[in-house]
Structures are given as structure tokens and as C-alpha cells.
Length: 95
Length: 496
Image 1 (cartoon, rainbow over the protein chains, first blue to last red):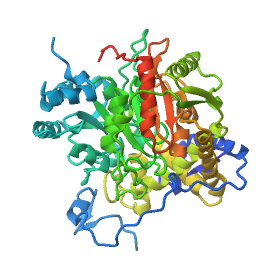
Image 2 (image 1 turned 90 degrees about the vertical axis):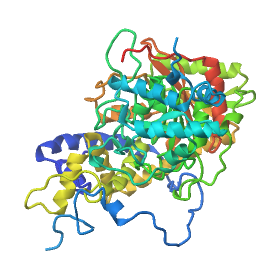
Image 3 (image 1 turned 120 degrees about the vertical axis):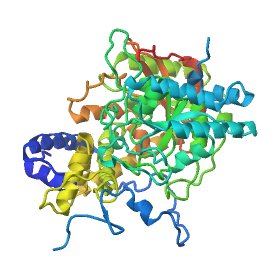
Image 4 (image 1 turned 180 degrees about the vertical axis):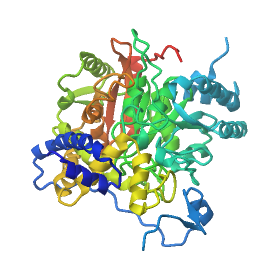
């Protein structure tokens, strides 16, 4: 399936990656060739086949529901590009 | 003549350390010296020599006190994808610029606790997406091997290309890597060393920057099969912090390796004989088959009928999981944030940060992943790929239930290409490099690449052995037999 400019724009937005208008045609053509490659999967008869959801069949382990101290506020904030008063700071979200 | 300690194998160095022939501090200094004069390879992206010197001194005390761990005092390199305290962790991405991990990955913590000495972090493709170590914020890593007739730089493969180049050039005695579609085995093959991807769940993924969670697995790159076994022993084991890490006992892999393959049944899959593959690859494959036969193994032709669908299935599943894993790089909690304009809101912050922070290949895969997971396409792509994945695993299960102990295939469809050679190619042609290795990730199996010869250009070629789940011991044994038979012990001539 070929990806048109609109579909490429949509993929970029879904991925939250800014793409300049003039770069869209190249991206659309690259995505098209990758998706065309994936189309080969349509040749396979998958009727009645279970999708693989776990690589090594085993029960998901659960841990004790207890409070653990794994990090502290200062450590967590130490990598943030911008902080204010002990919080992560971002541009205004709510008007 | 001064003994060049950095050129030793882990096994030899470990024995010599225990005999007191030299100290870990001396061994570590030899590696530091080698790293400092190997800038042209661009294998190491961050040095941690202070940490290394301290750990080496600690290891010497432990050795004096009788420590018997085979990796105690051994200098190694760590792929930049493992979180480490005291050395930057960037996964070769601009978006993790400045990130300092407050915790140590389980695998590197296990190595540290076993006494291994971390020399620094190793170059890779950004977020482990790539097969050439050219998609890196640090610039391309370079293969220490060159062709006979040219001085042009060759790629060490990828994504663990820095790890492979460093081990092949004797900058460290061994290294960690990760393998999502071939990222340990292909670089090992391109650089004439051994690379092992363990069974999915054998090594903890905790603290490793995630690419595709159902495919990622850490493993060693080493100079010999025995060294790979020693490193795996130190890296492997159940970890409660990773719910997909398996509660399997870790055997002493080294003692399982006597190189005796008499009575073993080795499968040769018809479907790996692909059109257009260089004769040299076929020749090395046939020679390896003959060698295992001479060593007493039984050779059987097998069929893995869904092999040709592995790559397209992989290039649905891996980008889908990547788009989900990489959603966390939003410019809020860590790493890079783009400069914003006056009127930019939070969406612009995400979109600009990710546009500037991710490289081209990562952006491509994240967009593909977002697309195949989006409404209306999920069934057609992602679910179908997961079904094909089931069929690929069944192919192997069928072969194993017919008594096959291991499968022998080429590791790669070609030897190392030139740096820059693939840059302008269609992205799919680069993906073809993984054609023999992705099946193993999709099925969750262990696989090992063993150097097996040189091509006409003088570049290394590798063979891959694929084993049953959890039977790395038997797989390593078979790899050891192949290693003994090929007798491959060539090193690149130093030019750097």
C-alpha cells in the first residue's frame, strides 16, 4: 500500500515528530517501500494461528505488594531539562 | 618483547591473574593504553578509566584473597545501551544527551559484582536500530579489518558495532552487546570474533534502554567461544526486576564445553540458501558443515518453511514495540529538550524535541511503528505479524522435535561493507543484513556467531549456530567444536 502525503503527515503526528512539509514526500516514499515489504505477510495462511504474545511460555510473575523506596525526588529531577519547585516544568497545558 | 596483555583472552588472562603473573591493574592499564591510541576506530564513546582503575585495584585484592570468579579483574567494554552509574548512558542518541543514570543495569551490576572492570561505554546504532553503527550521535564506528586492496573504512556492523570493533582490536578482553534482530551476531561476524545471543529471558533486561521488548536480549562479544561462555555465566540469571527474566538455573557453561559433538544432530535449513548469495558464503557454510560431520555430528537437511517471512514480520513487530518504548522520550523527565518559541505549547515541545533528538533511522522506525499500530491497521499488520511469528517458532519446534540439536547457517549474507556504502540505499536493503539472524529473535532462541574464514577481500565471515531454548551449554559446545575445526585465529593488521 502506498503512503500518500496525508498518511505520512498522520504517521508523523502519531509519533509526535515534527516534519517539515518539504520533507514529507521523501518520508512518504520511504514508508511506502517499508510497508510494501511488509505486505509479503499477506501471502501467509494464518487461519487459526494464535498470535504470539509471550516469547518464552511462562506465567507472569507477581511481586509482593509492598512499598519500596527505589529513588528520591532529587535524584529523579536531576535529569530533567527544566524543573520548578520540585516539579517537572513544561509549557502551559491548560488555559 | 613486552607481553601485550590486552591481546590475551579472558580465559588466559584469568588463569595468569590467579597465578600472580601480572595484576588486574597492569592488565587494565594495557587496555587503557590500547584505547587511547585507537581513536580512529571510534569504538569507545565514553571512557570510565577512573572507575576502571579503582575496580582493577579492588579485583586485585579479591584475587589475592582467593576469588575464583573467572571474570574477576577482566577489563571489558559496555555497550552504551546499558545504564551505568558513573559513566554516561545515551544509547548513542542526542535525545539522551546529558542523561546520568542513577542506577546500574542488572547485567552490568552482575559483571561488576563478579569483579569485571568497566573501561567505558561502546558505540552503537542509536537505540540499537541499525546494522552498521553509522546511525550514531557519536559518528560511525570503524571496523579494524580492511580489505586487502583498499584503505577504505569498513563498517563493524551493528548495532553492537563498537563492542565488536573494540574486542577485535584488543581494546578490551570482552564486551557486552544487545541483540534484537542480529545486533550481536552480525557485528561479531563482520569483525572475526564470537557473539552470543542467549535464549530470550536468560539475561535480565532491567536497566537496558529498551528497543523492542519482546526481542531484546543482552549477550557477550568475545575473542573465543570459551570467553563467551565465561561472560555469559557472569551476565545470566533470574532477576525479579524483569518479569520476562526466566527462573532458570545458570549452569557452569564452561564445563559443558568439551568440544565433543559425536552423535549430535545438526540441521542445515534449505531456506537459508538464498538467491544471489556470494559463493564465498556458500563455501564457508559447506566447509563448516563438513567439519562438524568430520567431528562426528550427524548432518541432516531440514526445512524451516516460514523463513522468508521472518524479516517482514520483524519489521512490523520491532518498530511497533519501539514506537511504544520510545514514547517516553518527551523532553520532560530526562535528556534533550528543543528550544521553544514564545507560542509553543506542549505538543510543539514533544514534536520539536523528538524531531531534533532522534536520528533519521529512529524517526523512520517510530513512524512506521505508530502507523502499523494505528486504528484500522493493527489487525492487518501487527496481529498478522504476531501470527507469522508463531509459525516461525513452530518451524524450529518441529525441527527440534525431529531430533535436531542445533541448526547451522551463515551468520550474514555478506562480509563487512564500506562505511557510507549503504547510506543512500533503500532502507529495506540494509534490513536484509539481518536475514539469517532475525528468525532467532522472533522465536526467542539462543544463537551464536563463530568466525569461520576470510573472503577474497580478506574480510572475516561467520557461521551461525542456533540452539534449543535454554541449551546454551550444548550450543557453546557445538560452537567450540566448530572453532577448533576452523582454527580461525586471525587478527586484523594494525593500521589505526
